[in-house]
Length: 265
Image (cartoon, helix red, strand yellow):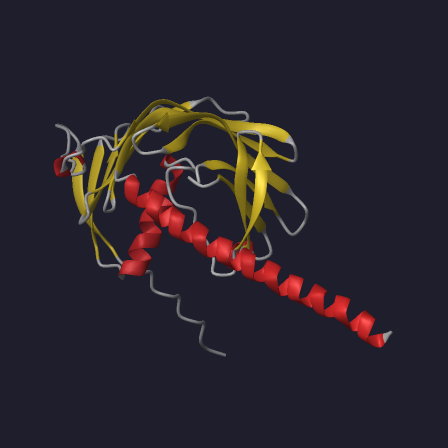
């Protein structure tokens, strides 16, 4: 009797190990395919509007060319442009008629973080590769826009500690279909792809309309009226010059110095 009971237990344990191995292999394959997809999309130009609940829609444009050339413009009332040409950051504020050029003295990792913070608001999900933690897991799924999909599941760290994030990607091309987040207090947010622009030559799709939801209620959307994939973008498209009549200044990006602890008794 004991031998008969032992055999199913062993089989269950082996099945569990097999499932973990399959999930790990899937996560590795997803990372590989995402890198291959990213290599296909060497440049793009997009233009559209972004609208959040209670605010007027704001127009924006964004140009990207690998490696790390970016230019984003916001329409009124902000009316400003940021551009990185690989060496300098440019900021043009039309309302103030000011033009600034920044050279960087940041370490590479800090510079990458700064550029991501500056330009990520211009780039909807689906154009950039998701940031995937080492601890992320992958599982098979389905989606209304894709009979076959995968979900990348990860628990965030740092300031967002404990927040679960789930990316939903079409299989096997890994087109972005949606993202769900659940905060430790139970608050749920979601981004949904409502319309896509597909390119047969590149064999991929990118979002044209994304809606944002909070607690089951729509709170915003991004709509792209222009999408050009692998558009020719010359180097000088990212090097800005000050318009006539603008105040010009040069600055330097440096690491912030930690505040000294208070002394004295």
